[in-house]
Image (cartoon, rainbow, N blue to C red; front, side):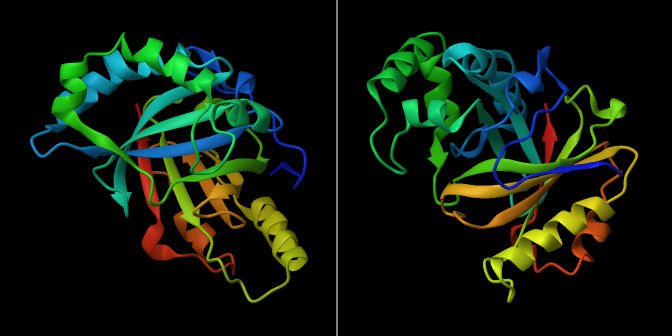
Length: 243
């Protein structure tokens, strides 16, 4: 399987994302954020899905220049049952133009765009369904490697996204770990799977790695990944459906 791997320049992809080309977003320097929503006590799944898919995400997808957002839902693992905003920034510079410091005050640009977007979303539904975002596990990830894109994965809605978090301590040097990760990506196989190497750029998992697998339903290569000889934090494994 062909592998594109670099720990400095980022990856350019060619998939279709709700009518958007992900090559427009997951390009060199792109940042990925996974924001888990805190639901209200009476929020029902159907109402949450309807609101996110038909009202909130369409607005968020276009609210902030040079970013894109879509809805994923936890279907297995640590985040099962949770709803997530998967937010893509086209570069580190774009991310910093909205959030210059980890955990710090957002910029005036972010505030302006957010206020405009908020006026297009039902405040009553937001209050009824949500209690904010879970920042305890938030991490800004960079894609630093990937296997060859698959034609069967061109349309993201309905596919599954698995995230395998590597343990912070691997008992090898950084260079040895990077070499092992490169070898692991070369060995991963799947006609209906694509594998991505993520590096924690900021926040909770800063300086750590994760492997993200995009695959067709029922075709996870979890066993391949977990038997690679790398040390994973199995309790954190999360699998999501892309809406």
